[in-house]
Length: 403
Image (tube, rainbow, N blue to C red; front, side, top):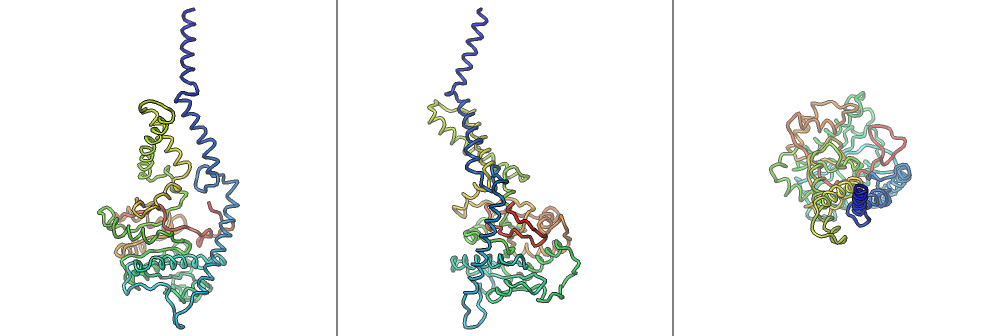
């Protein structure tokens, strides 16, 4: 009888510990409500979140994106058609000093008529340069047309406003290279041509290579000014081969091969864990401080940031140029790449030594050179350009999609 009474008393004490007011039950309910109800409801339309309902939203969002891109393409076309010329002479959209500090080279091919991707990119750069004013006097826009045919209407239109280098001399038969070259090797050779033309034409301090479907963000010039004049004077950033201004949002999660992100992820937990613990203790009227509770909230915040999407939390860094981070680069992709002039010349030599093919594009070639040549490269976060092109210049895409 005594044994049964003792066991009943122990069970009662355990049940009391697991009452609605107990810490364990409260934190369990918080976890279920957050990850099972609130976060899925709030994030089911966030494209780069684990809670995104792809089957519900992807097709509709892709079509809406394409329709919006068509409208912006038409707006960019009207922008240049209405841009007045200067006394009948060729007006330059933006003319830098005789030797520019930064050349912005936009590489273009004729792709998917109606979207006017290159017009969208150049018009946005033009607008941002005008807003920048005297601070951007050392910046030069430069268009590099690598279309083999003569049908690139947008490049012809822009030639009235922007200096243009035409690789194929405007004739379909004058390829300038082997017509049998695969599309990946041709893309690399086009890239080499445009980079070399930028250096030979202007001899700048820096070359920003931008593909014709990469729209610059509003903060691109203040951030570049801060990075190049302040941050890249640091010893570990000097002599970098290149600085990437874009990394695909779908690859920006913490659970990725980049070890630096794991340190950042742990740092998020160490920062938010104590803050959430203090808030919980205060509102739950719990005395003192609990290390187990802090450990829970550290893991809770790390899980929430990862599942909602690291990309969206990176947007907070746009509050100031000094908040942008610079971390070691990974292999994908090349919508916008910044080269210091000496590094650009080394890159030309390196790329001439490799051959690209399917599965080994120019982005992988550039990344492979880092280890082979003992070079370093970095990527800035968050992105300084938006990738708007759903139609690849390398492969046919009959069903364009945001993912």
